[in-house]
Image 1 (cartoon, rainbow, N blue to C red):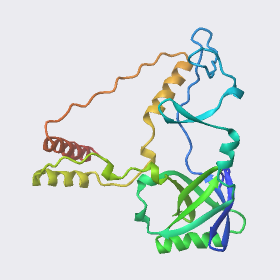
Image 2 (tube, rainbow, N blue to C red; image 1 turned 180 degrees about the vertical axis):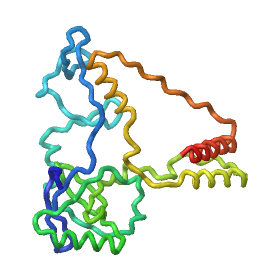
Image 3 (cartoon, rainbow, N blue to C red; image 1 turned 30 degrees about the horizontal axis):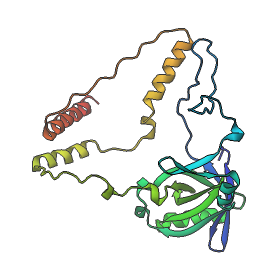
Length: 261
């Protein structure tokens, strides 16, 4: 792997230990703007200000607190928070192995590549075993003073570790508003099935770029060259009167596109 490891440790399976390195699998590509003074075009800084007095508060005078009820705070000292931090460790502890469909995508948060470090025979043996048995591992580890739970999966010949959200973060479908009971006609159901069939194809990641980011960067480059580009306004789609009408138009458009292709 040519990317730089962000963390090193060992993958623990019972009494066995496999040296591993953790690599970022995704990278931030958002556009980050600087905040400038409109008159001088110099960067401006943000300061902590007391809203009652308007005076700046020095960093050494700032305390962290948690609001337990309206207007009532519990102040936490830095030493107290440090004592509550998880114990530092270089172990990724494998808790159990489960079927892949036991972990819903709603639990996935951030993916990492888990590469071998030094001796790799055990590493690739584990990757092959997970692929052959069609299993995913559930693991936990501590990184940068933060506890993680993750899914240990196979990607090609390598392992991946996908950080999972914690239980208190994930909403159950039962927390959503109850669906309105509506009877679908056989015509609408059949047309919907035809639409699904018409859109069947392969997943091609290269097709799904961030168009907004590309447009903004192109606009910035043009302005940097002294040009004054114009962006076409996005067109609003008109609503349809019924599901059947919407499906009919969608099917007709897909058939037309296939004839042109």
